Image (cartoon, rainbow, N blue to C red; front, top):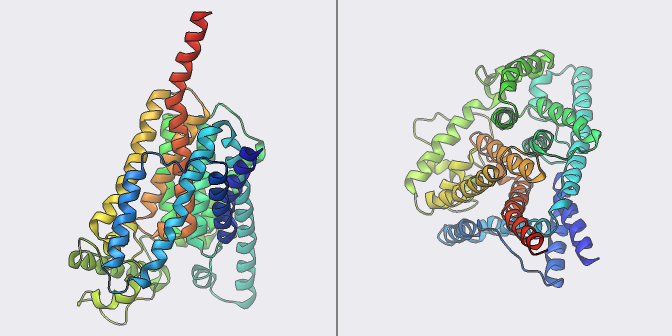
Length: 412
């Protein structure tokens, strides 16, 4: 009974990432308390080493910054990493129940995606009624689903879409049809979200899954991409071409160049501990290159729109290397387990491939946006890593269980 309650609290905490960050974190705290009351250990997988190093370096960077108290938000954010021991512990003990988590993520993300499509139609009709330029007005006020920002929303939609595709391609168990149908909602929400960093991240994430599923199907990808371009609304096509032909400051290309160049100067000036957590916005003007004309291009300068520069500028190059060490270790461990399993469809195989696809999406999207700076995206990211290590553990335990069974048969 207690294990069942803990299971559903953990699933609810992870599902509410897509609906309400406050509810999700409250349930996360409840899940940790229940884990301790049941007298389970808060067990981390072997990524605890780079994770501890990342925590330590972040704390040092904060202490050595001009305003340690101002960086406390990044210290508080360590709390969301408790999703790792919660989900890893629950699904290491009950891996077969992971299907319920995938169902919960799908339901929550699909509901958010469906609401975003309603938002899109509403915004289009409002612009049409007022005679405003839809491209200009919508670019600054895009669909968000249940989230507070379109970039957060689109990144979460891609994470669930990647897991659903992996489940379809690599699992031995078929899910209810509505879950597969929901992929069309998620894809439409990503397309109409106009978040170019997520569009670019979607391509390698999906290509990875297709390559390991049916390599010959790679030939269909350009056709699907062309079809998406053709059937997309005119404004969406304009947004796609803005990657190479921006509409002035509306598409924010110029301001991202400024943030990149400024971030490089921050890292050069403070390579070891950075300028400190939460200091980018406060010190940005001090590091803007002298040859950049004022006023600066229209855009948001509170962070650097790049996870690699952001971590290095805030916490130093060692801080960046710690988080990359954690990610690389996860990918390597997933890949090793995939090799052990082979091509036989299984629940472990789809989680492992799905996790690598999610990581690819985050790493590629992170070139163009500080996606892990959003608590919801970070929470989803560490949750996926947690269940991936539950799958790794299931793969590692499987041979031992087989040997034990064989021994019992032999003795009989």
